[in-house]
Every structure is written in C-alpha cells, then in structure tokens.
Amino acid sequence: MARAFFTMDDFDLSGRTVLLRVDINSPIDPATKTLLNDARLREHLSTIRDLRESKVVVLAHQSRPGKDDFTSLEPHAERLSALLGRPVKFVDGLYNRQALDAIRSLEPGEVLVLENVRFFAEEDALADQKIEKMAKTHLVRKLAPLAQYFVLDAFAAAHRAQPSLVGFVDVLPTLAGRVMEKELTMLNRAVQSQDRPKLAIFGGVKADDSIAVTKHMLEKDIVDKVLTTGGVANMFLQADGIDVGAPTADFMKKEVEEYGAYVGQCKELLAKFRERILLPTDVVLNDGGKRKAVHVKSLPSELQICDIGLDTIARYIDEIRAAKTVFFNGPAGVFEKDEFSVGTRELLQAIAESDAFSVVGGGHTVAAVEQYGLEDAMDHVSTGGGALINFLAGKELPLVMALERSRKKFTEKKA
Image 1 (cartoon, rainbow, N blue to C red):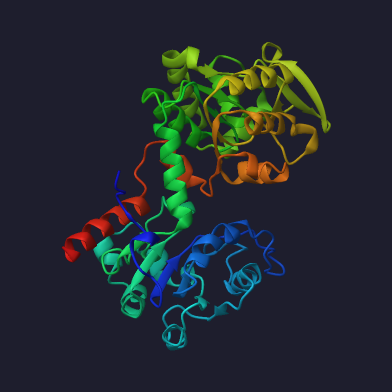
Image 2: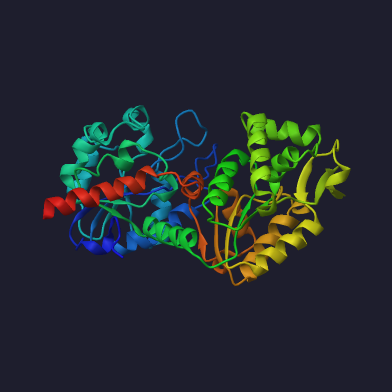
C-alpha cells in the first residue's frame, strides 16, 4: 500500500541541500553545559549517513527558555562529529549572514548544525498557528530558498506544531527521515496487528496521559487487556475503593493535576472494562529504603508505594508470555533505586524473552531498557514520550499531518 507521505527513497538527494529537522534534545549538565547522554543523537545517525551525498543543514532545539539546560547546540555538533567519525560544522546563528554564508558554502557530504531554534522568539511565539502563517516566518523565508528538500525526522516532537517543524511543508517537498519512517511503520504495525492477545502495560507517574490511552485502546479494541503498574495502578486502586495512603496519594496529587477527576475516569473505566483492566494484588512499600511487601487489602499505609509485589509480577508475566503483541510505557516503580527496581526489571525481561511483538517507549522506560541492556531484545524502542502517548491515544500528530500535506501538495504540483 502506498504511503501517505514521502520518504528519503522517493527522491535523488545527492548534491542537494537538505534541511534536516531532528530532535536531539538531550540531558545537559547545567554547570558545564556538557551532554550527559547522546542517545537522541545516535538515533539520527542512520538518517544523516543516508544523506552522505547531500549538503545537510541540521535544525534542532535544546530544552526551552527558562530551563537550566536551555543552551547552545555547539556541544551537540561536537558529539555528532565524534559519532559520525567526520567533521560537523557549527554556526552560532540560524538565519544571520554567517549562517546563510555557511549554508551556501557547503559541499556534498558536509554537515552543518545551526543554533538552537528556540533561541529565536518566533519558534515559541507562533507555536500551533496555521502553517500558512509559519511559512512567513524569518526562519522559513531565509532558509527555504537555499534548500531543495526538507527532511522531517523529529518523531519525539511529532505532537508539536512550531515553525521549524512544520513551517517548511508548503514551500519544500517534505520527506520522513529514517527515525520518523521507522517509528510510524512500527507503531502502525503494532496498533493494526490482529495477532492476539494484545496487551498494554502502563506505569510511571504521568498517569493522566495513560488514562486517555487506556480508554482509547480498550474502546477501539486495540488491546485485549491493560496491566497497570506504578502511578497508573495507584490511581486505579484508589478508584477501586482502596485507600493507598496519604504519602502515596499526596505524591500522585503533585504529579497529576486534577487528580480527583482522573480517579473518577478510572472508576468509569473499571465499571465498563472490569475484566480487561488488571490491578496489582500486592505492592511494595518504602520502609526506610527497604522493601516491605503488603497485600493491597492491608492498605492504607503511612509508607509510600514504590513498586509492585511478587504475586502481581508473576501474574503479569503469565499474561506477557501468552501475548502476541505488547506495549509498555512507564516503569512499574522507582526503578532508579535498586531496591524498588524489581517490578520494572522483571516485566521488561519477560517482554524481552517473549515471542510477542514488543513496543516500548517513554523517557523513563527507555532509560530502564538501556540500564538493563535489553534494547536489542525489543522489536521497537520508541524515541517518543508525548508523541508516543498521543499516537497511542489516537490523536492526530501535527508532524504526520504535515508530512501528508506536503506529499499531497507536491504530488499535485508535479502532476
């Protein structure tokens, strides 16, 4: 079936100037401004290597104004050079004379990184505006005439609409880069697959997002069951009439705005899908840094819930072993502390060893997968956090809509 968007294989890009929008937003040491992790950069290497005969101009952001890690992309360019094993140029500008001259002087095979797009007010000021308005920004008007193609590879920002992400789609043929192409291919495969049973395992503290995804996936019959862990389980337990205790509830209220309303949504979902939403039967409390396992019927507790218990782990592993497709988003507990990492580690290990087609994603989830060395055992490790959640919740992603819009526009123009 024909794709709804262009990919890099649809055009001869050799010798052409290509604007490449990536998402290399990375953990930064606030004191030294050095990169603490280069995972996001490594993800985009395949795209850049496949553009080795093009003149590549990289557009990207790092954090946002007001944050400690809102800084220049110069360290990213240096790290990218080391990863590629060849020089990568950097210019302290986006569309000033220095930047424009640097683009014009590029030779095929060279890579140039421009400055953090969020250093420039238009990027945030015009977010979520109409594409026609974004196309009139200084960024687009200055850079588009110097390029022949725009490659969109920032899946992790696919739920955003900003000038550097979607402003070029009406003025340049816009193609999905390798990260974007793989993400959309693998996620669509998993969502559309009819290999059953299909499971979704949702945890972490950003539980409000997971409630929306749970609702969508059960109502649309995308999965057969949802297994709850972490903060998601805490909210469903509360909705099921189990008082989780003040320390746990207070922590969740800090993490989830309108906590009470979301607990109400959980109650509605349990009323409608009781047999398809699995809750922990036992949890682990933090007793002075030590594990204290208790049955949920013995709650509330003055100690905070920090993991799921062994009985729940065993029950969930049985479900994983029987599954044909598994989604995993959000850790089962405070996995950063070894004492409370058991649930997260055991569930991920079970997924890695299963025959199921596996999709895992979200920032903390990816960190856990890497910590346990399981990247290669998963079928797809998504670079997206908010983008992944929005995709799984059935929401339209602005970047996917932009890709489809550009294909339609430039196919008609070619015709």
